[in-house]
Image 1: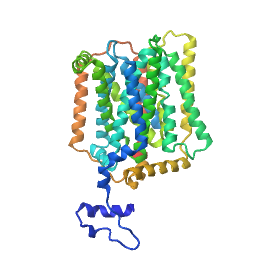
Image 2: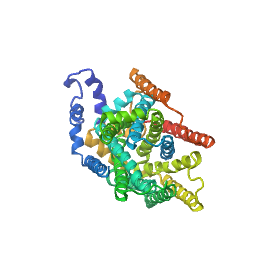
Image 3: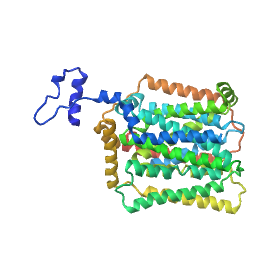
Image 4: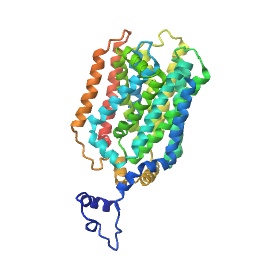
Length: 70
Length: 407
């Protein structure tokens, strides 16, 4: 799948029409280039990541401790 | 491992310029001034070493890491401010070992979230955990011995501040590891880390100084010593950069405890260069020597517990999971974790030279305003430590370049 993406890159960059790249065959499934879509939603992915909320919670707690001691 | 030890040397040396500052400055102003130096260094070094186009290429692969980097910077700034209050309230002797517990928490997060030490044999488990505990014990002994007899003003608040700093710093390693499992270069990560750092520190300084005008007045009043604080921040960044590489290539469980040897280096600067503990009793000196030996032993045990092949395969699983979650090209992650360039071309543009010129001009301007501090220094020992620190930089830098090309 990675190989397909690399082969597609020059064609995508040069503005090839969709039928010019990754022609479907019996062995290789066409791979959609969804990276632009993923870039748009990366913030959503971060917010849905449980690990993200651990440092956020610690940061809020730290600010509360700072407010208490100062 | 070499990066972790070099980080310790440079982070310890960064404490030296802060000792040159005469009393009378507010802790928040000291912290903010150092962070300004840190900010300048964090943009200059990546521009010089790799170029901003390399940083931009890195971010195109994993743009979500900007959020993680800024979050890590915010955690650092709050932790650093808490340590200043902790030292004020309970003194260095109690505060230092408490916030140095961050490596124990970092190990916990590494095992829980990033599969560190999974697949490692029992010797490595004992080496890492035992080494970290030894270092913690050594740090406690050193801190007690080197205490500046600061009276405890408010023990509960001071302990809470020190523990809070430890928890914040320990948790800061989650974003670090997140970035490095994805394959990002530490040089790219720190560029955005420092945005969070400076933003949060400025907000805290404005809040605790009472607004823009009082803060500006304090900074103007301190202009003759700001250069030394900026320099401290710059030196600190070099140490932190090696710490980040240690986390990337040796994991949190090894990298962080090794870089915590900074306490040993800070002690060497204090005793040999600034004449601290002169005239101290034999029991205090015995405590210092004993604590140093225990800490060095702990660092040695961790350094010998290298990452095994089985553990590496678990790291790769964690990295694959991370890449899948955020849609990062697996080839990019694979090659960058292996220290390869992943076909990114390094070239410097006018932006890089502009960044370097502005940062250099700022530092030179503060240097012209600076006054030589009136403080007794043992110049011979200072030269010895500077040479040793530069030697470690050269050794680790060459080794890192050969193995990873600073990826």
